[in-house]
Structure formats: structure tokens, C-alpha cells
Amino acid sequence: MTVRPRRWLMLALAPLVSVAFLASPISPAYAEPGDGTSAAPDEAAGKENQTLDELIESSNRRFVQAKGAVAKSTAAQKALAGKIKAAEARRNELIPEVNAIANQQYRFGQLNAASFLLSSKGSDDFLARAMSLEEINTEHDRKLAELNKAIDEVTKSKVALDSEVKKQKTNLVAMQKQKEAANQALNLVGGEGLTQGHVLASSPKAKPAPRNSEGGFSPESCTVQDPTTNGCITARTLNMYKETKKAGFDRFVGCHRDGGPFEHPKGRACDWSLQDSGFAVAHNADMKEYGNNLMAFLVRNADRLGIYYVIWYKQIWFPSEGEWRAYHGPSDHTDHVHVSML
Image (cartoon, rainbow, N blue to C red; front, side, top):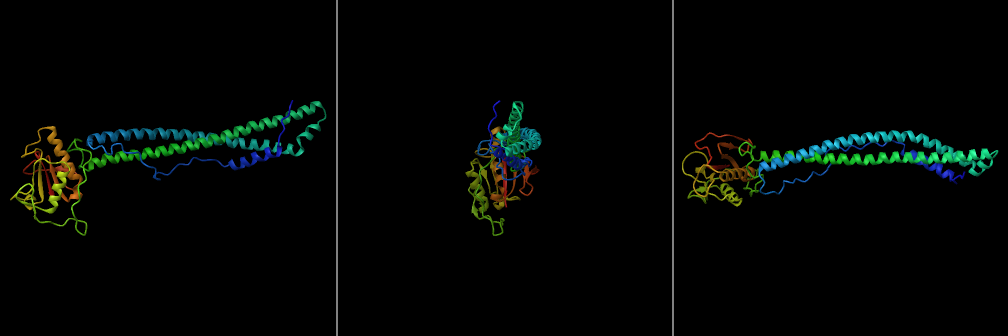
């Protein structure tokens, strides 16, 4: 039998060094939540003609999809953690065995392989010694390969686990983002009850009205010519009027009105009709959606424009409350959107 020549000392010491370095267990690194992982992009962003109903539906679909991905990732993490545990256990079992074989190699290397074989007492003894050396070498190679495989399994499983943790974090952020998108869209129009979702999901941003030094809106007098009547309105009301027109709401509107209570005689209110001239109750989808979208524009820009309240379709909205409630007044406001200014 041919005995493979060995560099005994080098082979003996190298495994001992590598085994000592790798002897400490490798544990999975679970990332802390909220460490800057970027959220998944919002696919709904920028879709100008998307309705609130469509935004809520698409947000819910993406929420469910992300939730499913989180569940899948959680299961994958559990499986990978099991693989890491098993691989670490096998690695820890092999380390003493590899060390024992390395010690044998080191011991035989001290005697010198040639002198060890030549000192045999006969051909049978020589053959037995040669076989012993070969078996030690083969066993060492096998155990060392098995150890390296276990170490690789630990490393690869840990990398895979870290990847799953990151994916889970991304999908958790996506879930939260979709939930917030739907809630925010609803909140910005005071809830879904008034429009049943039949309203644009977003509105143009209006140019803010000037504020006082304390950041609020000081009372204003009716000093500006009303472009809709022969009366006057406040500068803040005029800004609201111009910005609403600029946003595309160009059907009939009337602002100043003599006599009566509330804000019209003060130049602080406008009635926005649903048709090009005069007023008529919303009797088709176009009129109702025009009123919904106009209402949404005013509510979403209430803080910028300095709006006091909005009335539409038997309900009234105050910025301080942030939601719609039933309105009982001389008009049910099913033929126009009313807006009053601070």
C-alpha cells in the first residue's frame, strides 16, 4: 500500500488554529426594528385621477400582500434558526474529534513518518503501520471536511436568516405605510361616510393665506371687491376663491350676500354651485362627484386657507373636530358646497 507523504506539523497545527478560532457558537443576529430600513414605494403616489375608494382598495390589497410576506418570512426565520442550531451542534461535536486526530498527526510527525515505518519488526508490522498512518490521514480529511461543511452551513444559514429579517422589516414598514395611507386619506376628508369613497384621493395644494406674527389668522374686514357679486369680501376669502378656481372648480359661485346671520354679509363665505349657473340639487353622478371633490379640496387645504367650516350634503365639518356631523339648518346643502372663513 502506498503511503501519502505528509507535512505533519503544518497539517497538525492548522486545524488546531482554525478550530480554536471557530469554536465559539455563531448565533443569529436579530435586527432591532426601526433601524432605517426603507419602506416599500407607495404605488398609489402620483395617480392624479385615483378616487379615495380606489386608493383604499389598493392600499388594503398591498397591506394584505405585505402581511402574507411577513408570515412567510417568519416561518422561514424559524426554519433557518433550527438549521443553525443543528449545524452548530454538529460543529461542536466534530471539534474534539478533529483535535484528537490532529494530536495523533502531531505525535507521529515528531517521530518522522519514515523512521516510524522503518522501525517496524517485519513486513506485517510495516504494513500495519502504513495502514495506521493512512487511516489517520483519511479520517482527518473526512472529519475536517465534515467540520468545514458544518461551519459553512452555520454561516450560510445565518446570512439567509439576516436576509429574512430584513425582508420582514421592509414588509412590516410597508404594512404600516399602507394602513396610514388609507387612514390619512379618510381623515383628510373627515371619514368615508359622506362620500362613500367617490372622491379624488388627493387634491392640489392651495397657496397659504398670510398669517399673523403668532402664526394664526387675525380677524379681517370686508374690504376687497367680490368677483362674484357687487359686494365685498375679505382678502382671505379672495385668496380661497382664487385658489379654488385655480384647482379647477370653475362652476357658478356666489360669495357676498346682504342681510342675514353668519358669514356671507361679512364677506367671509362662498356658496359653490354644482352647475354652471344658478343652483340645483345634485341629481346625477357628475354633480355629486363635483361637490365631493370640491369639498375635499377645501377640507384638505383648510389649514392653509384659514377655513372656519365647510357644509356639504346635510353635514358640517370643523377643523377643530376633524370629522363630519349632521347639519340641521335652513338649507340641507345638497345643491352647493358652503365654505366659511376665519
